Image 1 (tube, rainbow, N blue to C red):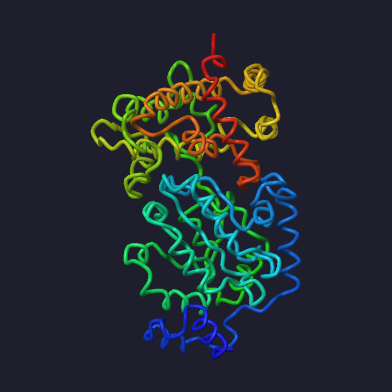
Image 2: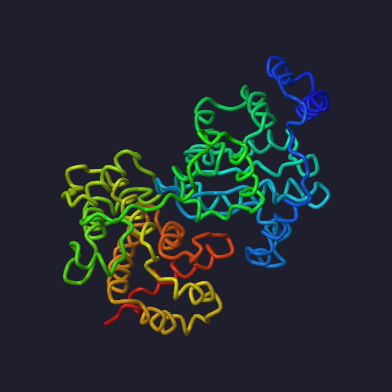
Amino acid sequence: MSSDLLVDLHDDLGGDDSPSAALDQLKLVQDKQWPPDDPVSISKSATDIKSLSEGSHLARDDPFYEIAKHQIVEVAGDDNFGRKVIVFSACRMPPHSQLDHHKLLMYLKQTLDKYVESDYTLIYFHHGMTSENKLSLSWLRDAYREFERKYKKNIKAFYIVHPTMFIRTVLIFFKPLISFKFGRKIHYVNYLSELEEIVKCDQLVIPSRVRAYDDKIRLNLKPSVVPGPISPPRSPPLPFQQFGVPLSVLRDRGADSEGIPLVMRDTISFLQEQGLQTEGIFRRSANVSLVKNIQHKYNSGEEVNFFQVEDVHLAAVILKTFLRELPEPLLTYKLYNDVVNFQYVDSESQVITIRNMLMSLPEENTASLRFLIQFLAQVSAESEVNKMTNTNLAVVFGPNLLWGQDAAMTLSSIGPINNFTRTLLDLHQEVFAQ
């Protein structure tokens, strides 16, 4: 198989035009490095796809419907650093004869187009790539060249989960083509447990085939080196804890007379004064150690003064992180189905429908939602300068206002959630009129 792979790589990239040094390194590839087809896991993968949303988030007449229905590409909300997460699952790719690879590339670009103006993270699940569905190296080369600077500039990290010798060798081969800056963004992730440092795994739609493979390789390790559990038990909340605490509890922990939590009040007050005209507000990530430090201060009962730090993007990330770490989303699980189905409400009925929906929220949720939406309307009013229209704000905040009870986000749900958020912003004056 080593010689076949070498020929495959050589032919795909144009034979003699390929860097000879990289070709020499391809001899490192060992036999049986490409994962064999597993009928059982393939069956699990097929079940996975059916269970997600029974089809594509696109209409049947959409030019990308045949690509989207496989759910190879998904969007999974934000990572632990406030960056949008794009997921690519190799095991969901059908055989070559059933997939137009050029259309797949165009669909990937179309998906990324909604997010590349913001910092984002790409997670690639490599397990499940076989000789039947593998992407050619010429496709990978074209993909890298197709994604111009705007795509590469704001991708902050590219995680390859369960890398094989093959994928490592491919990256060695592509090294002469990949810029140094982009190369530094590529990271290998050997076990799903390692992803927890990057993103909450329960918000990702991880194919069962990938989970099963991860369980298998973990069981094959010696007990002393087996990675920890994917979701370690949470420690009891601290007496002053602000993150990861229900809004009902936060009413007694620094919330003002209207029930607005301390973190929301601090961040929004600062952003109203310092951030409204900052281009890309809510699109940039912040220094990870600073984010953790601010969270620790809040949870320890220490005072936080963003006017001393003077970092607009830090405050913006802290606000999004606070919303994302609520045990139940601000819009509550109860409204999930109503929000997802809101796209079918006619325009004349939207205001009264939203009002009726929000009436079911607890008082503290309603107060916090009103406070947030009225602030975001101020941000949108400065969109000529900050570039954050209601549509752009909905893309950023939709997944932080609502997610399913299983926490997993898919394009099938994220679109309707963003649509509801945009409409709420458009109609906020009528919805929240006294």
